[in-house]
Length: 71
Image (cartoon, rainbow, N blue to C red):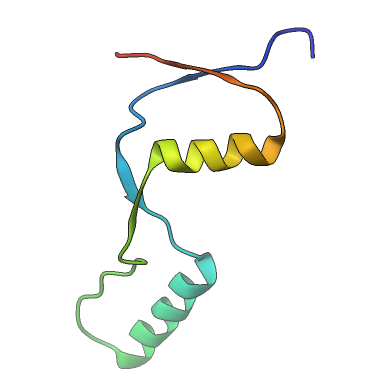
């Protein structure tokens, strides 16, 4: 609480596929039961990191300064 809320970040435009761990575990189980093959588990939807960051900051209720480090 002594320093102002400031977050140093990297590339916020990168996109990732975020999945519920329960869905992934279910996929692992089904893959193990099948016994062979190649499986790519994911939600099939990519989300930009800046969207996730905005959601988390909004949920915190704080006013946060976000500074992007170009390096």
